[in-house]
Amino acid sequence: MNEDEIKKNIFQLLKKIAPDTEPSALKPEENIRETLGIDSFDALQFIIAISEKLGIEIPEKDYGKTNTLNDLVGYIKNKMGV
Amino acid sequence: MGEFLMPSLGADMEDGTLIEWKKKIGDSVKRGDVIAEVETQKGLIEIEIFEEGIIEKILIKEGTKVPVGTIMALISPIGVPLETKKEKPIELHPIEKKVTEVMPRETAEESHIKASPLAKRIAEDHHIDIKQIKGSGYDGVITKEDVEHAIEQRDTIDKEQTILKTEKTATDSEAIRFAIAAAMSKSNKEIPHYYLEKKIDLTKALAWLQEANQQRKVQARLLPVVLFIKAIAKSLVDFPDLNAVWENGLHTKKDINIGFVVALHNGGIMVPAIHQADLKTVDEIMEALNDLIPRARAMKLRSSELSDGTITLTSMGDRGADSVFGVIYPPQVAIIGFGSISEQPFAENGMLGIRTVVNATLAGDHRATDGLTGSRFLNVLSENLQKPELL
Image 1: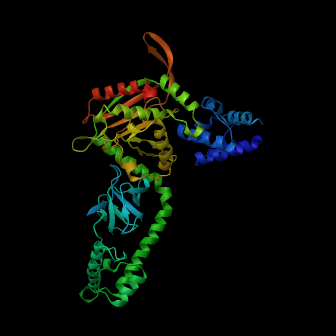
Image 2: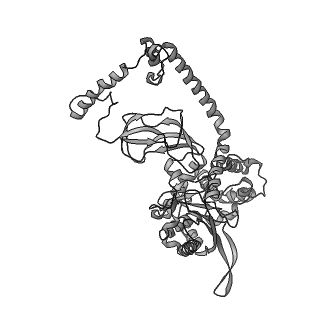
Image 3: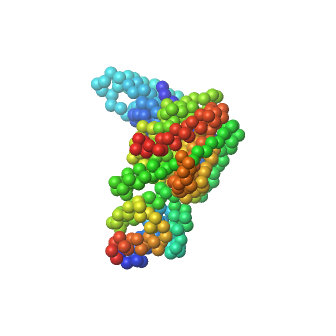
């Protein structure tokens, strides 16, 4: 899976969590939750969804490494070994 | 004979529109069954029934808007024969024989309706209840024109309702805004609030949570708010006057049902109740949230979830304001607020350190309790959050 496909998956899942926002308009360094107005419950739902979709394990201590789009994509790439 | 009424789903609700009956005449119902769907300002709500029996009569037609307290159906206790259960087989059982004896009376009633045979046939063809039509003919006889007029009226209402349904989505947010406005104005007008705040050290609670979550699959992870809910419920056991309603005096509630404020994506809030939160484990509370929050946001809650709250919790999560001082949801007598969790300088035993803390607040109804009760409650709440393993 390349970076674009990872991003596509992220945007799809974020859109599901926050249907009234436009995740694909996120800037690379913007805080995802703040920009899209995602609360802690929805943030957990997103972590569950992305873990299930991409088959990766995101431990709670790593949540801080997934704040921006850049961070999240990098983290997932690292986890998936791509 | 039991009566099923349009329920009140909060101090702000005046009426509701019956959208669909989920049970029909002759169906048996038990406590907790969903009997109907009702459109309210808070969305399409599944209405539960709280008695056992058999639906004997349905009095309100789908699509009708009725005030709170209107009798919508009659429920006969189980074992009592139904007058309207014509389709039931007749033989063998003596009780059922009784049913057949009743039937002729029903038929006789129908034959008393003064209507021309043609009018009766048209009504039947169009599924119109002829008994509801007022006759304009000689001596009140229902004519063909009366029936046609009734059909026309019904079709117009149906059409209006279809239009209303399509316009509904746009007005949902507005309806919720008005519901909140009504409830909060009533609260501010009638309830003399007092406010208290306590800074609570969450270091132990969050360390426990982190440890617990490490052992859980991502789907079963807990959020800090689960500990808040359980700690509140546990603390309330010793403060029954805060778990109560004020309706011409203080009435304490046996069950501790915590109304949890859910912010909707398009603005507005819903406050579904987590039933008997004191008896639930933290995992069960998380399960309840996983169930309630998406349904609250989709505005698909059950009547008991909207009306059974005995106290409210509003929690800012991890990104909100430092403190929140709530407005009590009448007729409740208290609302607890949790601000966002943050690291702060914290002095203890003459030492200064950095701790993860949260500001917990209580807005209490001064008619029901005094600040001392509220203050003691916040102390116990803080103590309970220092022993997360016992929650």
